[in-house]
Length: 109
Image (cartoon, rainbow, N blue to C red; front, side, top):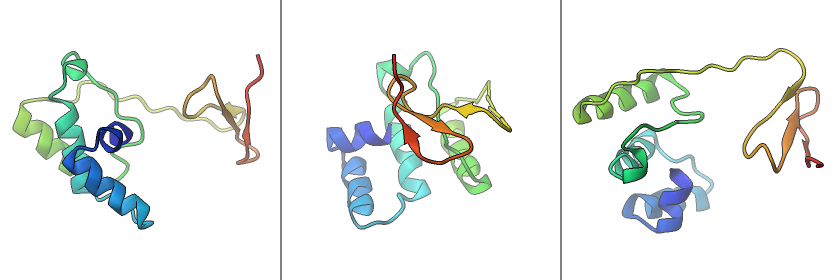
């Protein structure tokens, strides 16, 4: 959602890009605003997945407040926990991370 807002040059996307270009984190309020914008799109009408957000209690509270204003409730949460082995992140078909080494390794087919 964040990348899409930046690519679409929405007002919030432009603010997010400015923060990123300055080496800053995108604020929680800005991210929640971008999520709020995205929820208006037809692609989110049947549901949506947030990957990595919220990551803090404050982020969860801000997200809950925004969802409550929209009359939306979180109905499922997935938590993937692993101790050893391969952990896949991002686009699984294009890269992978090894749990032992933080280096990226291309997937071979």
